[in-house]
Image (cartoon, rainbow, N blue to C red):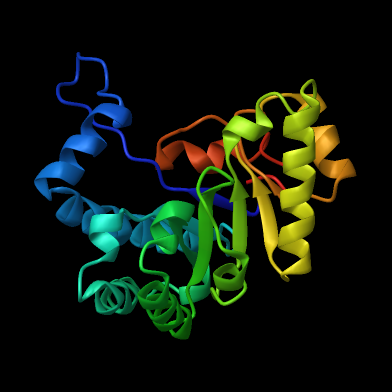
Length: 230
């Protein structure tokens, strides 16, 4: 295990089923509530990582998704710096995930923001890569560390030649740009073998571990062991 991703779940009442993120995230975006929610998630994830390290877990990176509305806040970079200072987390142990469509919106401004985040020492990943439109002339200027291949391409890559070609091309593109490539949504051994053969750096998905509360992570490490798993 080399890292994990912070996921948000809404449990309205103890005896009710959780509300699916696909339902409440869009509402939070529309109302602006995603900004305080996102700030809470960032602080909680950083504090949890520090706690894990104090409990003896080796240093690793926790990824936190950031919404476009949150990213556009004028004080966003300062808010990251404040959280790192308050929690005491090493910046290298935090990764900010931005979607491909987000970073391509007003790309020149995004480049400045991304460089400011990198100066903090924080890692940056482009999430859902392959689903949006990326200009290679801009992509090579983005100071990002990882490209995350969208799960829609990974799902059938073992049986669909087109998806297999897309995934292998993204892996080659990422490596040629000096980036690590992460495959999302890995669920089968056939997918694992294809990704290994094609040199994918990191794999993430149910094949290695399903979403779980932070309290269960330590006890789950006995079975989350594959090299390059996330």
